[in-house]
Length: 128
Image 1 (cartoon, one colour):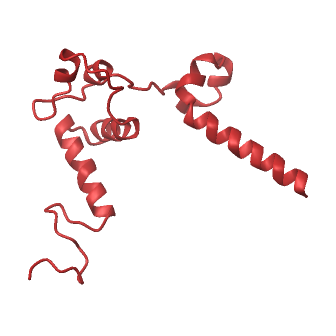
Image 2 (spheres, one colour):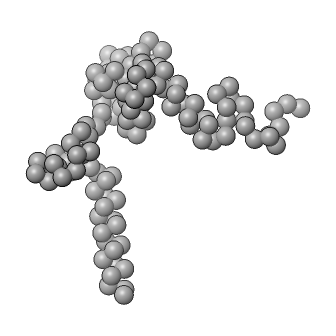
C-alpha cells in the first residue's frame, strides 16, 4: 500500500512540475506527442513586453510600448492574466481595455465587491 502511495505521489509531483515548467519543456516534446494534446499545440507564452504588444495587449490607457521603448528588463505581464484577457478579447470581441475591465470586474465580483468598489456584504460598514 505504501508503495502505491509513493508512486502516486511521484506521478503527482511530476505532473505539477511538468505543468509549471511547460514553456521550457514544450519545445523539446516531439510533434507526434504534442498532437495527442491539442491544447498544447496552441500554447505560446507571451514572455516579453514586445511579444505582448504584438499580441494586442497595449493601449493608450495601458501603454506597454513605453516599457519596450525604455528597454525594461522585466519579463512581462502576468502570464495567467494575459491569457485571461486574450480569451475575453476573443470570446467577447472587445478591445484590450474593455477586456481588462471585464476581467477586473469578475475578480471584484468573486471577492464580493461590486464594480463601483462597494462591498456586496450586507453586514459591511460603508459609512459612519
